[in-house]
Image 1 (cartoon, rainbow, N blue to C red):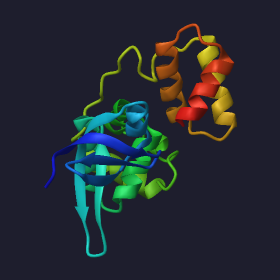
Image 2: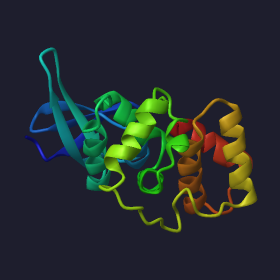
Image 3: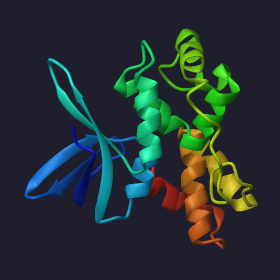
Image 4: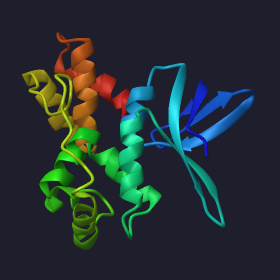
Length: 193
């Protein structure tokens, strides 16, 4: 099994990345969290999970080992496949998801597209003892936002973008440029989402 792939980013979309190393391009399916982390980079080190089935061999890539570990826990739950796990990790930041599972908040999981009541409860039941609530950092989406950042997130959500992903992008933009106006934040966020 592969542990990681290190190389040039040949192609990047919100759902996948092609990492070229040794003259070979490896296509890895990614979450929006990993997409945000890879945006603007030319090279990367991607921790991977290889899913081998009768009809397909797929790679799933993660910027952090912590995200990959959570992905592996999610797919160990009956009824949760790789694409559902990736959708969960795209909708909820890793540390938030750890907190949701540790606290047993099935309602928060049900907000993810494709996760119903039974699946959310099964995830909580199976993983509650295996996951500890994560720690947030000052730049994490749970941190307080300025007025311009809050307005930008509201605007992005009204445009149809996912709130956790919008918050993460807006936090990143605000951290890079604290004096950015609402319009500047939205313009940059639209390019990144």
